[in-house]
Image (cartoon, rainbow over the protein chains, first blue to last red):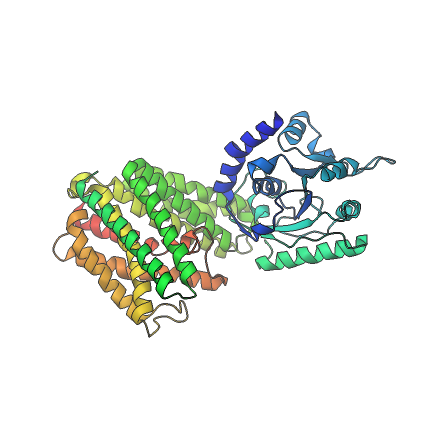
Length: 212
Length: 308
């Protein structure tokens, strides 16, 4: 049922909205995984990030693309929680887990079932059009699934279109770069360094300056 | 639809078929490195011509909406390539809002408002919004670039749409749609002719600092071809008589060239090759409507002064 609601929501609202307001020039779209298990690791500047990443997949795959999202933010009120769980199909993540609880267990399970995860290793949206430091939760996940490819994606412009703390989207064309997939590098530090390097490289490809 | 307009549309269809054949034959018998790009460009011509003809064929309102959409995409592309200030996010929203209003004046055929709305009211309103925001660092540059974008992508281009709002009595041959078709077809045809003549006989560069591809031969032969076609087509599509079609052809030929190189100068300033990637083989939408930003207002006022 909620799979159909999601499909209708994307066909009628999300896709026309993104086509009119944004318009995306995606480089190396062929590097996107056709099926799971896989992890999309994207930079995070805007709520539009998740909608845009999900709309890159065909409708037949859409219900298998699962954004990992902060439980404390998206489950705090009943309406947003319903939307997040039933339309966006988020996997809630406890940012401050209770001691003794494995916060990633349910996410690892979904990944093992062959779904595609959307992850924002920067954590929160931060300053618009500015990359912040990556958090190492993703390495933990990769360590438990060492063969799963992680596809890094970098978007420029979404922070201009709808930055944190604003509700009014402003039209801008968006530049997107899909990087080459990488897998677990043996240790957490090396994995994070490899991912950091991919992001730095993708950010450079855009050649966009800071947004002053 | 007036009979003359139908014939003109068949003519355009014929040219598209001819262009596709020439490029197809070239790919077959004299392959070169730029063939794929040419092929993409030709395919995009079919899509653009198809959308434009569909809009004119259905009715006036749809054609006006079509041009409003072109203005919107062009302004969006402009705002995406220029450096904007974070403080001006909300100001950009008001700039976008000018598009539906400007095209509303067009659909109402309210000439007085159409002609002053952006050059007067928005020119005064946008800096006011910016002052309310209160960021003075980079104020002058931001006010200047925002208004230049509005004038180019909204005010100038909307002149093409206003041809549809002119009374049909002024052009018994084919009405406002005839004038619009004449302008848009000749502007695009002129682009292609300057490109083709430049490839065939172009030697001396006109303005190497701005656009290294433009040659004297391409420019002169392009303008001549455009003027000739203007002279041939004018009796069927426009009220222009005597010497007037020749001047209209020169306006479109020379104006189109200037529009093209102004956008080239803008891109060179920003250090980019194409303004975007919306139209495969052409680049962005600004790359396609650059000539029209000059020819639309110039041709409009020429016809308006003489016949309305």
